[in-house]
Image 1 (tube, rainbow, N blue to C red):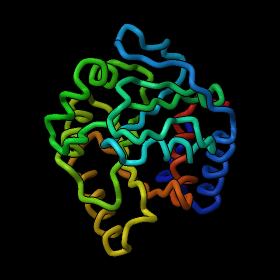
Image 2 (tube, rainbow, N blue to C red):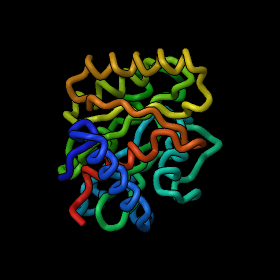
Image 3 (tube, rainbow, N blue to C red):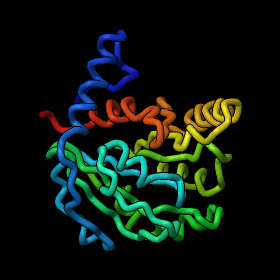
Image 4 (cartoon, one colour):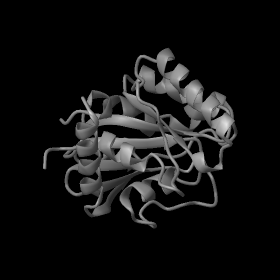
Length: 221
């Protein structure tokens, strides 16, 4: 496994990691499986990175921006519609897993309701799950459902990384507050990865850095 950006010793090594991320995410990324039941999960043949967040957080747009494929992950006009795990093969080296959105009702209870059964069992029992990318909307405050998701991920002993989305639509002073809040949340959860990444699917901000982070988790070329 390659080092992540936090382990980069200098600008040259950081640039090399970002270039490795660009090269991996230039490779074909194709849908290959959808699971609605635990017994339907595909064979654990690749390292997996799962994407989750509140409904309408911009998850599908981020996955599309990472892979450069505008229609890879479906952008739904109906938040919370997807209720299954969708698996995508990235160049035979990494599986990207699109998880259902949670918490559209903005209540922490909805996390348990939406993620009971398949979702929690997947998180807790998938041996090749390397990281969960937890998306938080940069434009709004952290919701109770987000905090509940962090607790669930911690209970499942799954490393998660906070990624702020829609940064281009957030006022600068508010964005700074959100970044500080995210850094504080990391310190509160032992399962949280220390690096918070700020992104925009519209401008491309943070996309190279997130690609580099995920590439560090991929199978060797």
